[in-house]
Length: 355
Image (tube, rainbow, N blue to C red; front, side, top):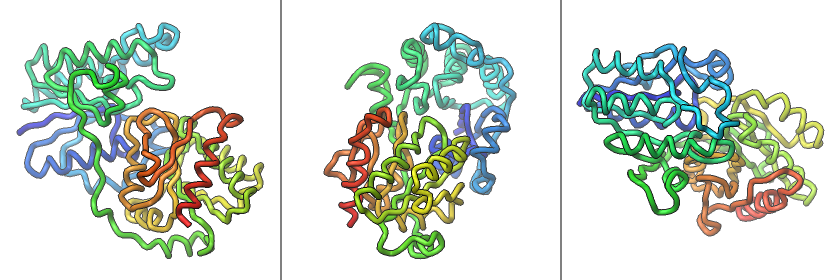
């Protein structure tokens, strides 16, 4: 089968969505002809979140286009509540060219915005059966224009099939238990890759008596890593011996380092930056607790990875981040720092469980 994939984001940027695309399509490429169509990404994204280490795993064709003409850059999406069409015309043109060149049997389009219009054009104009996958922050959630929900419903009605990476995505568009399409959740390797947790602890100079809390995410405002630093201060004030290890890169890094110093916890925090794929297992093996305070996730792949290592998880009651309190995790409400009392309490409780 000839499979064409359209996605607004892909490697070398490394994040949950990009890794899921890689893992799904490198497996399908063993039996099918796969071609991924994706725009050239901004230099700032490649600098802050990019890595070339996954390039060797790509066993399918990747074709890039210039996203010059996109209505996503037009001002007014927020003040019109999303009434302006949020689509890329460059993506439509790129799909038209790819269909003419590759003659795909099926098209899989990831994200409704800005690539959803290309899905409809492929289906309705060129007769290519199209699957729309809802997996990104264009799904209704914090900061997303309210009317985008109606654009998404219109797109879904005009393509052959729709998949969602979590029940949250479908419920956010249609309401609980309603809507067209299937939930196909993201996966992680089971059993997970082995790592040397003791070596990681030794390299980071974390005492064997300390509880090691690991957090992995982009260092971006929506990830609210600052909440972890305040929670750490709370734990230390309560007499808990704990070290927080923060993995990831991003524009928030300097501010987070400054905040750690301001809170007087810098000796208890390790900012380790980008963690190579081969080393990641060691960090999961080393930690006693995994913590994640993102304000908006449509799945939360890194949480699933932590759970695959059998680690207790403490996260927030927000969007797709849901863990039953009796299923190796605790939840706290995501809110302003001055009101976020449940978060450090949950943080402390989960550390106690790890003990």
